[in-house]
Length: 262
Image (cartoon, rainbow, N blue to C red; front, side, top):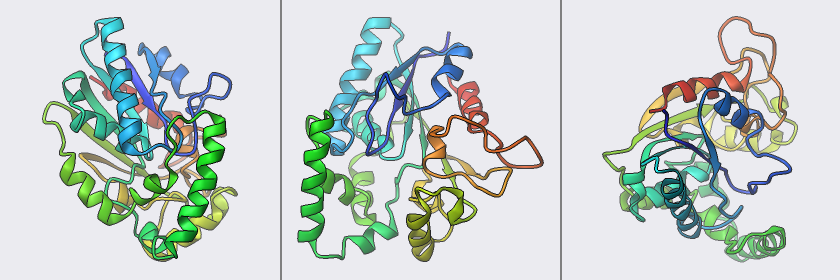
C-alpha cells in the first residue's frame, strides 16, 4: 500500500473544509488509492513556525496510521516550509518523497527588486496583512519574513542551512503562462516578472523553482498557459480539450505525480 499523501498549501491561503485549496486533486489521489492529509500551517507564517506545524502533522500521521513515512506534495512557499521540517526539524526519516510545484527554492529576482523599495513601506504593509490573516486564523503570521524568504540571498542561505536529506526523494515542477491574459488575477505580476526573469506562472520563473529531480516546465495544450492559481486547480475544470502536446487538465499532472509516488 502507498504511503499517505500530505498536501501542503502555499502562502495566502489556509486549509479549509469549505473551500479546498487543492481543487479536484484530493479526490483524484483517493481514487488512485492514496489517503490524503493536509498540512494545516498558517497562511503567512515564516518557514520556521510553519515548518514546526508541518513537523507535528507528519509525526501525528505516522503515529496514527503506523505508515512509517508520508509522501508530501507542496505548492509554492509550502515547499520551503516542508524542507525546513525535513532538514532542520529532522523529519526526513518520516518522509519518502517531496514533490514541489512552483516553490521558490532558488529565490526570485523580482522579489530582489521589490525589496529595494523603502523597508518601512514593505514592513507597514506586512503588518496590516498580518492583522488580517490573524483574524482569518493564523496563529503566527509574519508576512515580511515570508516575503524576505523569497529573495535570492535568503534562498542561498536557506539552501545552505537546509540540505537535502539523502533518504528523501525530491522532485520539482515548473509552469508558465503563455501571456498575461492567461489569468486575469495574475496578469500584472506576470508582466512584472516577465520583465526581470522571462516567462513565468504569474509569480515565479522556472529558474526559481528547480530543485532535486526537475520534472520540466509544463505548458498547457491551449493558448492560455498554466498560472500559479491553475497549479492548484483553482477553477476546478480542464484548460481545454485534449489536443497535441501540452497539458489539457491539471489533473493530468497530479495523476503523473500520484503514479510516481513510493
